[in-house]
Amino acid sequence: MTETTTIRVPRKTRDHLAELAKERGVSIGRLVETLAAVQPTAAQRAEQLAADREHARKLIGIDISDEEFDKAPDILGNIYRIAAEKARSARNAEEGRGGAA
Image 1 (tube, rainbow, N blue to C red):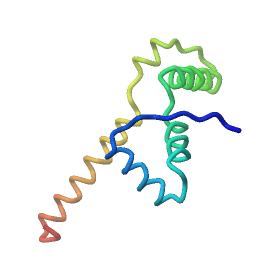
Image 2 (cartoon, rainbow, N blue to C red; image 1 turned 90 degrees about the horizontal axis):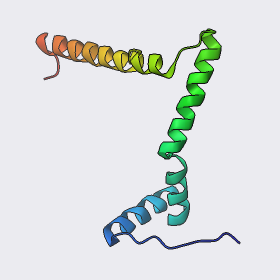
Image 3 (cartoon, helix red, strand yellow; image 1 turned 90 degrees about the vertical axis):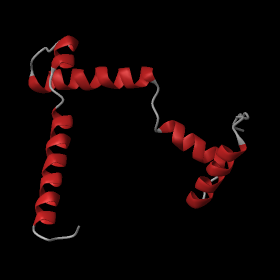
């Protein structure tokens, strides 16, 4: 049998968790397990970052230091920024042509 314990939370939080669990057709305990499973700890994030960097080093065949990785541009962040700018421009152009206000 699985060992369990009690977690004390405010009643409002418990009620919210109960509603979420009901919507998903699971117990509150199962819901909390699922939420915890998808939220890595700082140590787990650091371990994944190290593994990702090692994979990138092997993939490109060049030994890049952690400091060089840290100085690299945020490519994904830049793509999101560009996409958001284009969406705003398109929306503003549409509004300027008498489209949806």
